[in-house]
Image (cartoon, rainbow, N blue to C red; front, side):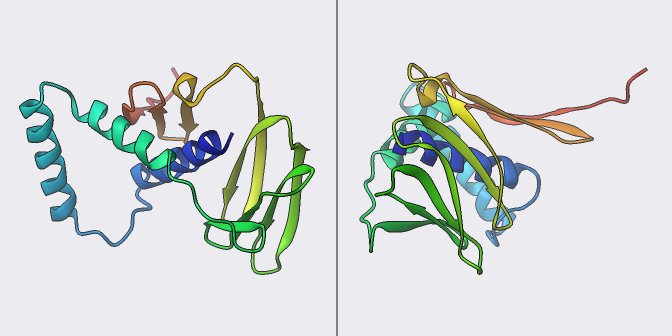
Length: 159
């Protein structure tokens, strides 16, 4: 469950980044990183997506320590681990959001310190089974949890 939520967060960040909400990393550094990643993939007979997938799996295996029963998972967003229900504390006002009972898996989408919604996840689904899709008026962004392919499709106007 922890890996799934972390992956959901990564997908949201990746999709947000593709929409232009990136950090202050210079574009030249990003271009250089893409070239190095491509060269590394060619050297090892694999793809840049496979390397990114392996890096993400390694990151998702990292266990973060709890401090007082919670941990920061985003800007003004805290996951509370020891509750009977899936619980977040959100925003400067520290509002409590509670979702499904602890035994149930769910994904929660948070933006601008507000819970936008939740999706119940069947027990037999893993992070590799998921594809995140974000429809905007002009583009459809996607991140495939199995191949770690990500990008967007232009949305032409309906006829």
